[in-house]
Image 1 (spheres, rainbow, N blue to C red):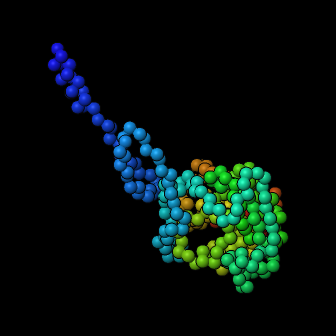
Image 2: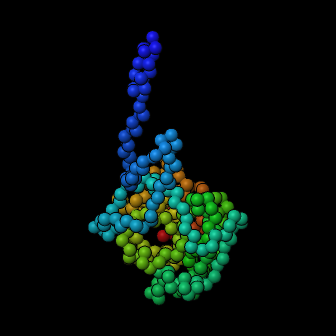
Length: 281
């Protein structure tokens, strides 16, 4: 009888095994490869590694119109929540803070302004404003706007901050960004950019500091088969609501409407979900 029990125990021990990991399933988005690691202590669960993404690191293949190819959203960006890099000292937890001043010479020099722009440097203002990041921390952003809307814009972002609506970054656009190869993954909330309107020869409202784009990746531009940023295709699904998306009637829309600005999402074509403007275009 003892021999039988020993035999049965050995048989059961030999049949036990760790279940195989199910094969990865495909999705509508591309997934960056991850190198597997080997654990020396299988009984201890591995600490999950937060997904990483370096914005602006990978140029896209170009379309005939010069824009980047519109591609599926990488898995790490489908529910985008990248941390904010502080360019200015953060305000710390507490009330909203903002400043407005003439654009300092060093800031003007690293902006896209030049004498050929349709607005004089003296008609622009440099703002610093508190904003809440996707990391749920308070940060200080910077923005150049037209002098006549400076006070109104700071009020808008006060409401946005107090509501806890997240912004990934808020910084002045540099000249090199206008000619850099497209990477399709930007998410900078900004105003003044001395450029023409997309696909046109006339000046954009941004070139006057009279428009603001809010979380462009979460709120892309759509015209025909063109999506900007080009990797933001997942965010065309407005029924799948994620942090940073602007929705009808939310704090962002209400706050801009209160200062008389319109929203590009209400246009027939293009649909510019990120774009708020004092000029209607």
